[in-house]
Length: 604
Image (cartoon, rainbow, N blue to C red):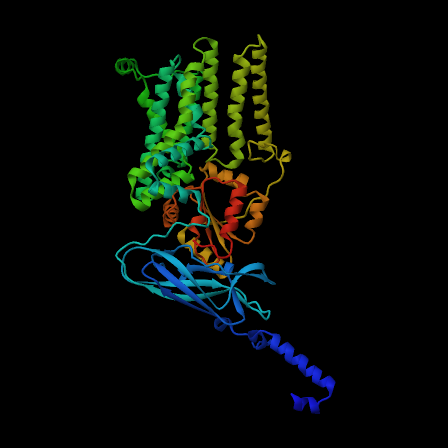
């Protein structure tokens, strides 16, 4: 230094000192990087996968100096393009990183040097198993270069095992309602299971899938004429037990056979026959004719009735059983959970008990309504005839509700106009305006008549919504545009195309006879926020109305017991099973599920 000081001018010497200080102050890794000296991604981020036993994989990331990986960009999946290995991955145990204020993504957790991630594996017992893996990652260099997201394809061989491996419970991520309930049935105490599913049944009793049972049971009680409270309770109990028994047996059979038994009863001709039956019952209540058995058979049945004090209990129970198959054809999370437990574990006792108790919960309000009807209905006189006719109107409403699932939507308003006009006629003719109550009854009849006229006007204007029959009176709603698929091959093709384009997939299992499916279409899929969240998603719809071989194969492929069920796939073409939506879900809840399912790093 003294030599340089003696031969160099003072200003040049000062410049050299400045350069030396700046160079020494730079991190070693960054000082060596230039615009053309960034490492290739595979050198900057080295990835290896090794088996840790028969049910666990360790993925190691070795990171070059002055480079880092993002925690939120990790994702792990089985490469389905290489075939189905008969295993699935659980939620990866990703350690906490260090926080970094990143110029690309803001404040994020990142990793320097190295990080190891453990991924659990679910598999059946058997020989050694080779899994093709797809590992997603993204990283950057401190010097300012950010690499695009990439996928690494590796394979790892798990040793043979004589025990099945199941995935551990998810401790921190999203868990669908049906998965939580299934875990409760399998592992919870029996009293807690019974109390929970009875309460869930009570909630389901007030859904559109169960409410049509109210006029059915009430009409049965009203058709008996003068009934005591005890008899009304017995008839209602027979109806509820018939419904609960069939729900349970059909559920067990469906789970054991891997098919949806109730869907068999949603064929158009079956629905039409039962709708006509309700029309005939309504006509009988209007007094157009009397339904009665031959005199000899009536006498024999009367003798049996007097001995057993049961009357038509068997017939009422059969009506409850048929109502369970025809009316309550909706899949809800509690039902799906019980069916899944039976199908996956073979525990028919626990799953069947949960189904039966849930059905009793669904029938509890029916029991109360049916029993009170026997006490509150007029016992004699013209009022009794009027009330019977009004129950006939309710029967027409049930018939319209059933037929609305299978006729073209343009005729829905016409179907609902029929019970509206019937109610108007009954209230106007049967109720005499001798007091304010009479005028009130006639006034209600006028309202029903006007509503019927509005329905016909809406039909002429092209409306399809009986709750908003005049299109100009309701705000325009845009619907999601789905691409329809029919077979398993169709689905595989669309998922492969979406994966190649780097897009997630949503599949909606739909049926015309599914009330909750139409609720999803009307109230959830028309929501602006839902549509915004799904803007970059490939939307598919599987219409399983026909329940033919292709529909059944598609449902069985994913272990789905019926609509409405919505499934999500990530950009790697892997289904995110824990994000499945079963039953109707409001727009705000669905938005949260869809956003989580599409988040980077979402795991099955």
